[in-house]
Amino acid sequence: MRRVLGRIALVLVGLLAVAAIYAYQQVSSLETERVTDDVHVLFGLGGNVGVLATERGAVIVDTLTFRMQGARIREAGEKIGRGPAQAIINTHYHSDHTHGNPAFAAGTKVWSTQRTRDYLLHFDADYWQGGAEGTLPNQVFDDAHELSVGGKTIRLQHLGPGHTGGDLVVLFVEDRVLHTGDLFFNGRYPNIDLEAGGSVREWIATLDRVLALDFDRVIPGHGPVTDREGMRAFQNFLRELWTLAEQAAREGKSLAETQGMPGLSADAGYQTIGIPFVFKLDRAFVIRRAWEEATGAVTALQVPARPVN
Ligand SMILES: [Zn+2]
Image 1 (cartoon, rainbow, N blue to C red):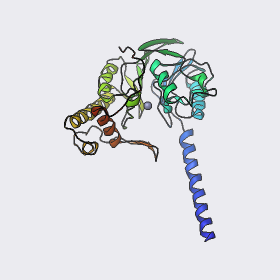
Image 2 (image 1 turned 45 degrees about the vertical axis):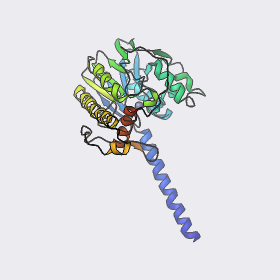
Image 3 (image 1 turned 30 degrees about the horizontal axis):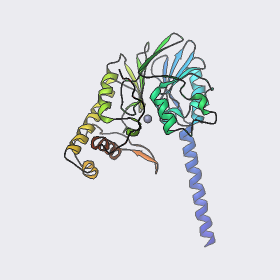
Image 4 (image 1 turned 90 degrees about the vertical axis):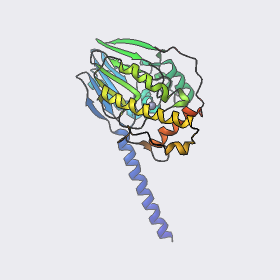
């Protein structure tokens, strides 16, 4: 008996080691892709990172999930951004876009909307202490702000609710590249953060305003780099999702009945994002969230109203 238990323990230790190695590889891998001469994307475990090279150094958009990844972004950003980070931009408050911030020097300029800062302090306060508060957003605005760094123009705009209530998009003007943060998931099921002011219904109109901007290439929050057609396909998916949810609410359908309704086809080929037993962004998840919004079964955090362009 003892021998059998010993073997089981050995197998378990082996499995844990494999899981730890896998997790380490996931966290430490950082792939780089060129979008233009001066704009690169870093892909890792978490939201896509944008790096703009300027004459004075790097501008970094989002910082992945772990401080250790932030350190790798800092190093890679310094190389491909032609110098140390001059500014960090956080597209929204989620940990897979912000938790690398503390790897940068305290006092680095960190831009976000005021709402994103509000959400960070409300939903994620524990993380942002013990030194980490030095890289909380310290340059905030409500609806739009333009930055000039080392000969480059960077336009930050909050164009309405969608994924959360505080998302901004980043336009690298000279390079005609847009980083959308999580207002756009390319080929993947999106998170819909209704509690932090997100809305499927309003997301569709917000994307109309995003699509009116002047750009060629798009870095989504998750998934491969694409163009405005890719973003339109995602908007179409949201339209189908909202139509389905509204119909379900009108007809008084239960969530289980709604999950079985036809009408969603633009998600063909979409990938699921998830961590086993923690969360899963899949078809059932997006239908549940849209149904909750359409039937009013959700309570959003109340933050002071902010103007929207
Ligand atoms: Zn997000």
